[in-house]
Image 1 (cartoon, rainbow, N blue to C red):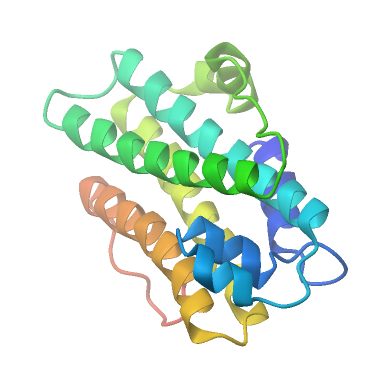
Image 2: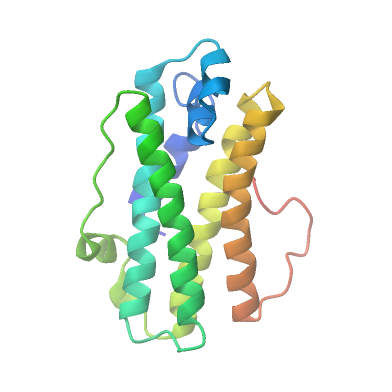
Length: 193
């Protein structure tokens, strides 16, 4: 996985200092302005920064699926699933952009697909299996990133929002693993570690 993506996920997961989303930011992300208004201790600048890290990762996922679709390596049977997963990431992106704007921030722009392709070393992809393995790694990383912020919430509803985002990423990982013919993880607690 690229160091750019690894660094972004670590930034999102960092549990000390200002690197944890506030309850208000996650409430806005979930579309609950009422819940956001009730949240205490919001640090909007910090939240915008962290949400922009998450947005950058969603932009990269959207690009990665576009790169995969255009590679000629993905079969006609797999392509619709990749497009659907890309659609999920676009929904995540749109929710993040709306939340960042509600917090008064400026959403980070997507990098060009060519730049993302270089960061992901897309030239090394030689088969559909290579493409699926890359997507699988990215989806697991995204699931772990969203799981990583769950413990910071005392409000169960806010933890549920992060869990819902993580579950989308986990669902993608499971489908990709099935397509690859992978066995189930041999041990429990595979995600979030």
